[in-house]
Image (cartoon, rainbow over all chains, first blue to last red; front, side):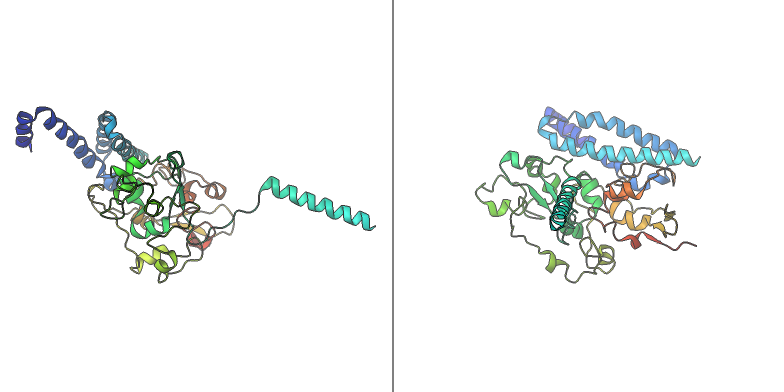
Length: 97
Length: 261
């Protein structure tokens, strides 16, 4: 993947970086929000880390340009649900301690 | 005497008419195929189109609630998603499936506006649209329920009549199997009313976790969120689904199942 990114950045500098930057936030979204079903089994620190990663993702999605307005709207909503659920799970954990 | 009776009758009639006008008439109970129906008109009429009629019964037979309300991003409250034709054309919202591959295309630019038969499959409020699926034919073998759509959807899945899809390639995230939380009982406030057994299993199989928490049920600890039947009837808490799509609140015995000791 990195080699391909490097080749792309040489051949098509602007395009290559944009394409991979786009993949970057989606991959991160999939990784972070693909774990909600295990949330209640995570430790407090793991949940805090997931919430922090959600918070870091938000401005990256917000930055999508107007041609991706729908994508921005959909993923901000999905991110909110996922972040809120981790916060809910964290509250449950703290309450149990 | 006759005159007095006449005026008394007239007064009673006037009073009854006024009462009805002030308090409104009893809301008509939707027909089975209408139950769960949503009308979408954020932008339709502004764009010169008839509002969309969305049938929950057909979509819930094919997809889980989680797929549409978590992965695709439809809000839980009607009219708050703000779907535009352009969103569908880009493959989001209705366009996630209605893309001419999985299902007929929604809002494609290739359909001329004059070809209303294609548009009116969804944009059909107040019209008799020709639809691919007829409620009566589609559900004729399904286990029957007492209220709502007249279908016991839970049994329909248990008996293999429906198999709602929970994953849409390119949209859903591949997830591990869900660890189901324990069932619990909720004590009814009315004396003598059977307690409610809340089944996490039944709810998470279609909803996942983040559909209900924390948007609908905020309380972390059991009993932390206090709510009443009035609030539920008002469309809050259980009422978000159980007054719109899932079996309605009239079906008391499906929730109040535990006998009082």
